[in-house]
Image (cartoon, rainbow over all chains, first blue to last red):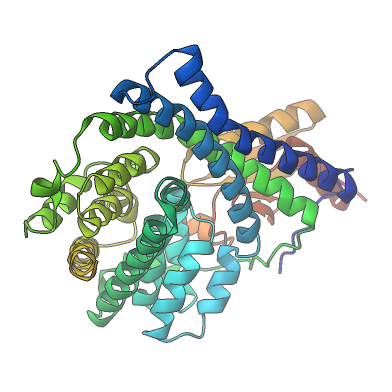
Length: 348
Length: 85
């Protein structure tokens, strides 16, 4: 049994909280200041016509970029705090006694709140399967964790409101639950790489005991890491979105990406597969497409395909999955995404 | 001699952790062997599901994040004390 002892770094809880309150106040001031500032720069400083296309695009861009980056920092911080309560070890313990069905639902939901990095996909897979969690339940987790991406949720929330963000989370959950359940039913345990079943644990890791200072410190670390990684994508994405906002006429896209064309959903999924890691940049574009008349189901299917179905992840999973299971994994997710796209096109 | 193992399949964060380990060891001026563990069965032997993981004298001290150099120093000091009381 190994216990984790965090070393006594001399830092008082009080100091952390004072710093945090200071940051919150600064954040609020900045957040309320960006709209007037964006308007002043576009219309007073640059003397653009407030009714012109260029003026509208520039004002939209100058307002949205700082707004989204502030929102992203604040929300990533909050989500990271929540995530310090859900370690992969705890999630594994929670899923331990669950059967298929309900287990898939739990696994998909835990996939949203458990910290996940694609480089940890294989150790997680082995750790879950080896602990006796059913294969299908493990897959529900492994599909939900990367597909329901926190940055994507925040961007959708900030740019298009809670409704689109909620639909994205809901469709991700449906895909993860259904695809995981189907894979579980297919009984493909023999296509898991043989070494996975032979792993022998020498030690057992227990949960860390964290203080609030630890949680805040870690959340701050992940804000720096995540925002540092995605900010450029976000800026470029919003720039393209702003261009579409000002220049592409309403309903120009309806004929191509509207709900009428039956092939638009599978096509969107197919195009999304090779696009990877631009999750942060793709959201502003996809969201703007929705505003301009692309149907929501198609747009969400495209987004999930970009974020959830990626070739690099396939290469990583190849280490633990034999070919038939790997192919099944991809095909089932793709079908589930297409199905969800049609469903939302039909319902909305 | 102290043995430090960095668990990870070669992702960017694992390399950062390895660099921190080397840096701390150099600063402390002690003789330590730093080993990279990259094979999944070997990583899983320590039950570490989120990489990078850090193991000092067969004890898992951190996983799933990059600890600060100060933390690593404290862990090593701790391990040295248990080794030579």
